[in-house]
Length: 108
Length: 108
DNA sequence: CTGGATCCTGATGGATACTG
DNA sequence: CAGTATCCATCAGGATCCAG
Image (cartoon, rainbow over all chains, first blue to last red; front, side):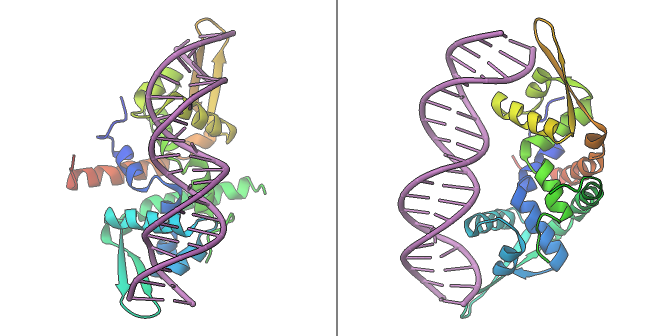
């Protein structure tokens, strides 16, 4: 059974199968609506460019909502849409798994 | 709350936060033990190099097991380890979500 | 001063050909 | 059959620059 575009998992991976996207979502689930700079500081190792790019893709896919406040200094807030919120079970499972295996495997 | 190396989700993402890894796992969950060529045919768009590379990483992380049969023609079988199998809930959630949103969003 | 666009460069992924 | 090697296109990171 091949894994083509009709495969649900391939579809999911297509939308959130990227390291930073998952971590962005983690931050939004964990902290609620956040500004660009907050997300940036909240994710270790990401560059501004990458963050912008991934945020835009998530926005384009309807997973997060981007609200720009036309003021000085600029303020942009990101929040989860209903579609984005529906991803929570996946994140929860990843969190559960990671918690389990950080315990047993506490390297570094 | 920053997302550093102590974050369970970051840990999970570190191990399986890669497009092809998830699809490899999907194939192994779906079809059981498989040979290299079967996985290769089962995943649309992946190159041999990528597949080899990701399989090796999954092996190094103890998620899959690689069994080489010393015969001609060569035969290599990949299967999930216990650790790999424990990822099933995550894959299940991704499958569930993808199924939902392929229905509603049947583009292409 | 924040969000992000641009430019340059090094790293990564893909296609193909080749080997044990 | 299951890779490895090679070459090349695209992508990611860092620094810098820009607009509001």
